[in-house]
Image (cartoon, rainbow, N blue to C red; front, side):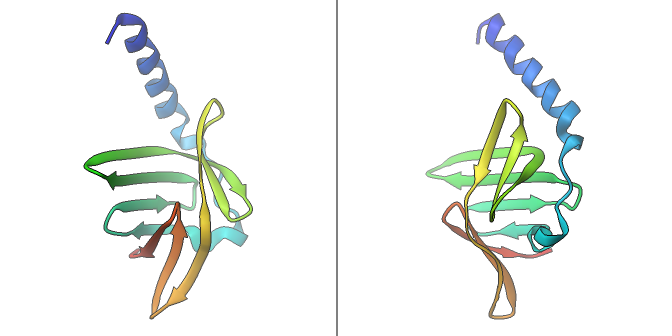
Length: 114
């Protein structure tokens, strides 16, 4: 990695650390999203204060994200910084099935375990 790229990565990392506490709290009407959700290939944690942690394994490649919640767009939610964010597509918001809380995010059925 050249010096310019290293500098950009360092600045983005520092900004992400400084702003990670700047997430919007989860609104009361979306409280069911709060918790730790998991499937075989995906982990998602959404805290009441708007902190979001995500990890996904796919084809031997691991993707992870730890960033603030920017808000909800319908059932979907946006995570990240103003200049660098991602939208999680919620096909089915939290629901009860077989005595467990579940939701479908980015095509993956997740089960809440906390």
